[in-house]
Length: 404
Image (cartoon, rainbow, N blue to C red):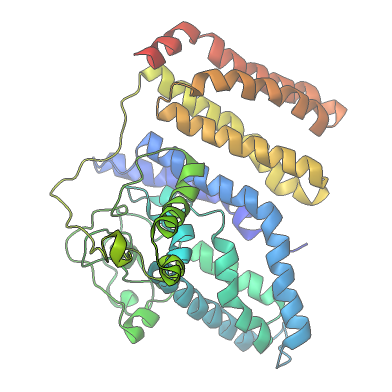
């Protein structure tokens, strides 16, 4: 099985996020909010968990197209072929990325990455669970050309890894480097919801495609981050589904059959005439408020601790997936997704969240007994007891938090 380069890089992601937080504190700048960053990471974890099932399928499609339709024999030992493959991946990514801002059905997957109203390294990990399906469609021509699956996977992975470091506000302009390569300044523009910044700078590693095809915009004043209609939720499942629901609702309400299809194929902001017609991006008010529901300190600590307790089993799932049975992977994935939703609801101070916690932690016991070898079950059960204790100790105080 091909290595998961993204999963292997996870420890370095966290190390660099910690470094960014420390540097920002030294400069007396606030670039992180706990609830926002946990939601970014929750979306990223959900994407990686879903990818446990999607990656084999999508790579299988690429491999099938390569085996049955490639035009040229490309050798793995040619340095120039690796360079061409990387350029091909970046070129295909540009057109996927641009299309994801110009076609509603693709934007419904990509919108997740743009929802955060902050801009820091954790935002780089905020990814849609379904986006890999659409991006693979743009990569299939590389299989037809003849780039082997291993070469393609490595190039696509490193193209993704490059884009991690450009999600920061702490690095300014980089001179001549910016003429060719994507940089934090260029990508800050891409994440802006100011009208002049929308749908600009779609490049992955290289910015030359934007310069060639007329989608480049230099950074002037700092952008206002987020989407034109703020998400106002910390629920990662809602983050992945809300735009689909809006599209389906628009298709249901419009009368003309062709308009029901155009809702999905037109650009974001397009509506049929009977739903009010196209809507331009609204101007951004000065110093717009950010979604940030107030939480008692005890509830914030509890939600953060439950998120941290979830990280070890997620890591095991990602690294041991090849040796796990399908039913166990499905059960573990559903439990992880449920837990991420639960953490999001806690940060929203949702009234049902705390009651659902008892059911979630109760179901964790049989899952651990079923999933872990005999010698590791005691450790797994101890982790669950710690999670339960985190509920029991502040029980009355947290109940008052939800009642307030």
